Image (tube, rainbow, N blue to C red; front, side, top):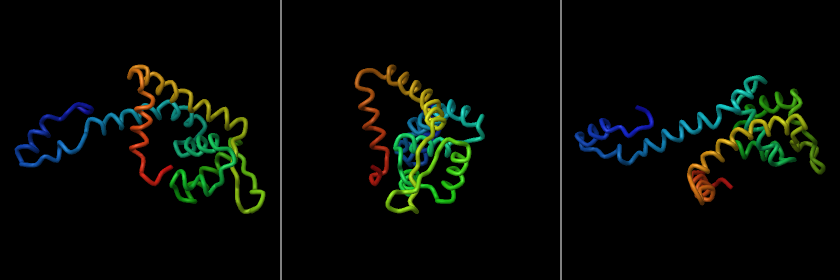
Length: 161
């Protein structure tokens, strides 16, 4: 069953003289898959009602968290193509969730801001995720938040800030 140690696979690997199964932490990998599925499920419902997806969520989240970020900064943060961002950003702008302003020194630079509606949507998407995190932290015990932060920071690529 998914999420449980696979003893048959471990026995087969042992009989074959390999220990690759032991080197792969399938239990944690599967917990990540299931946690991500559930972590994104509540926002997915809200987004779907507006015809949006997870890419819209990520753009809205980072623009709301860092008002005035440039398109270049957002591309760097999300590590997506200009073409992918352009489509999603246009939909968010056309729907009234984000507005862009030309940079004060360089008019070609575009600074991004969430509108009032965008802030409301970003909050509505973050609240169920925040509750899910708080519930999991409460079940984990004292010091969980700092431990989880260190763990997740360790999971990021070294070149990420």
